[in-house]
Amino acid sequence: MAELSPFVYWAQTENNISLKVDLRDAKIPDVTLTEKKLHFSADGYGAKGQHNYGFLLDFHSSIDPEESKFKVTDRQVEFVLKKTTNKWWPRLTATPQKPAWLKIDFDRWKTEDDDDDEETRDVMGDYPDLYKRLEKEELGYRKEDLKKVYLIFYNLCQFVGFTYIITVMAIRYFRDGPNSMEGTYEAVGGAMKFCQLMQFLEVMHPLFGYTKGGVLTPLIQVLGRNIIVFCMIEAEPRMWGKPVVFYLFLIYSLVELVRYPYYICELFKIHSGFLVWLRYTMWIPLYPLGFLCEGIVILRDIPYFEETQKFTVSLPNSLNFSFHFPTVMRIYLLIFFFPALYVMMSHMYKTRVKKLGPKKLKYKFN
Image (cartoon, rainbow, N blue to C red; front, top):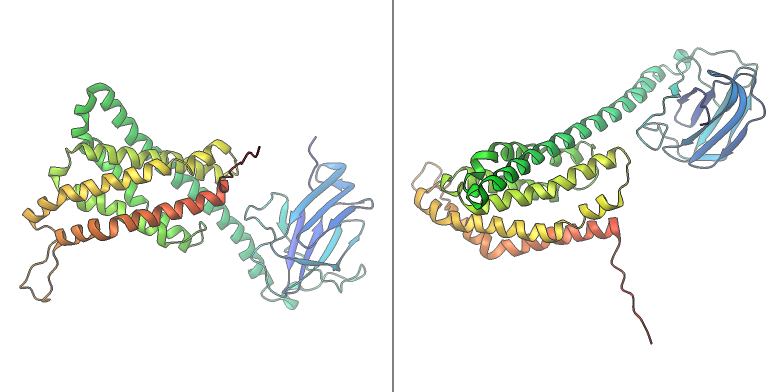
């Protein structure tokens, strides 16, 4: 049977954390307190009656166990924990997920100078901004929960979108064979454009603290894919029937069909060794193939844009500025194509090493 958890009410000042364990007639509790953790266990009368209750708290920041103390009264167990640094914590727990039994103490505020005979003080008088601060703390937990719900919904939507793309492509291919490649863009181009536009949100997520990681790498990847889809394919209808579009969309979809389930599992704290390995291994063949397909699309588009002069700015004009888009395409292929591939592959390799570790070579000596 799982250990029952009592209700725990908490509050803070700049210097201390106050905990009130709602447990009446508690026997001598078993308390283990370290800089980052508090483990509590005791027999007493709580929300579920007379039972053994316990909980484990992983603190957001460090406390000083030597300067912290607790006391047992007839109605509750009270803790006053001394912070190692005098600052307000954004939340009590290390993780943004707040346990259901953890509440905010809006009624009392105890410091390490309080004693058993002290009457309940005027909290609003002593700490006029306390309620607002504590409400922000509770709202902070709710915001963290909303972030998780949003990220799950976003990753699920993207997974469904790319599943739809690859399913339609597979059905068409099994039905019509290689002839289906010519109609790939008409069949799934709209869904691909939507999914690629949605990926700009992944550039914003680290900026707003929704995810960890840098901004530059996802920006380069998302911007590059959108340029290929919207500028190179959507803007030139003669590219729609090329087989390379089929292969490019297939590669994009295969990468994302692993990436988004991996992110969903991470949000639910579900660890799948095979999924982790797949996430950080599939890119090894797919990324170079994707770059190759993108290069072919750009190369095939050069004569088309030479003819139409689309995205090209010619003189004379009011800004006295000229821009020849086919020349930019040639410069990218000649100078920046392989460096861009190297940068992306290096980034993915470093990420793979962090997740899976470097490959260990075993030597056998006779």
